[in-house]
Length: 379
Image 1 (cartoon, rainbow, N blue to C red):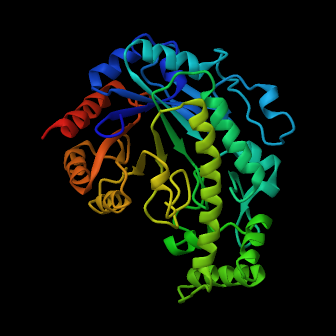
Image 2 (image 1 turned 120 degrees about the vertical axis):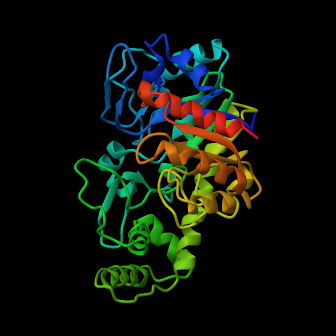
């Protein structure tokens, strides 16, 4: 079930306690629910849930029992969701969806954890000015790779699923929404890229192994950021090697994670959240040269309805794996733009569709979701 399917994303709290959830999914026409099993902190609307309107998940959580024996000896360990009474939210929600005849993909977010990054700043991404990004665990650290692999395994342990969807399987960078964000428009895309280069101790050691002078790289990054802010031209030496080091760490992380995923969910197709620009950081990190070949499909963020988004799909499709177009019906999407947007994505090479989001949408947006499904399925 790799090509052709249409999925909708959801959280366990969207499913549990709402007897009408499955009916709405069927009405929309979705055949797969991509259900969060491990997810970062969020404040989520639940406009159609009969028992609540807002869920505040104030830290990243594993929506499974957190077994002490799995995490013993590790300073990186998840917490369960204290905002949910169900002891095993993902397993319970997944079982109810599969019992209703729906396909379930386990949605696992790996390196995005503000609580752990704040408690262990030496394992977090650090920019060239020494500013830490606590929400971002750096994959260059062996501890981070071990944590991510165990998290994936524990998310899947003992739960039958049909697919696995892996997010943040790589490095996060500068861009990140947080409380009362005051950074919009402060940097050009070029400066954002430079400020997303991790300069932690492990990354510097990796550069040194590649023959680079870490201090020189950091000074070059700083100078370029400052020059860009002044509107002056700038350049940084050795960026190709810096990117190669990041990609090596990403490949090592992905290998560890996929090995555990395939142990716990043998035969389940794996979708990787990714971006065709190799420099991109975030929930959908830039594809490394070997990333697409390691998985069954690549999910590409296609929330912007601008025609240029189709170019991202085409670039991702050139890697030789099915492309899953990740599209939202929520703002800033304009429902009037969506049919043409979907047609462009399909023409560019997308063979699957993922909708965001089944639980966040109020009743008056459900026809838009259904319309997207109908557009996708039309010749």
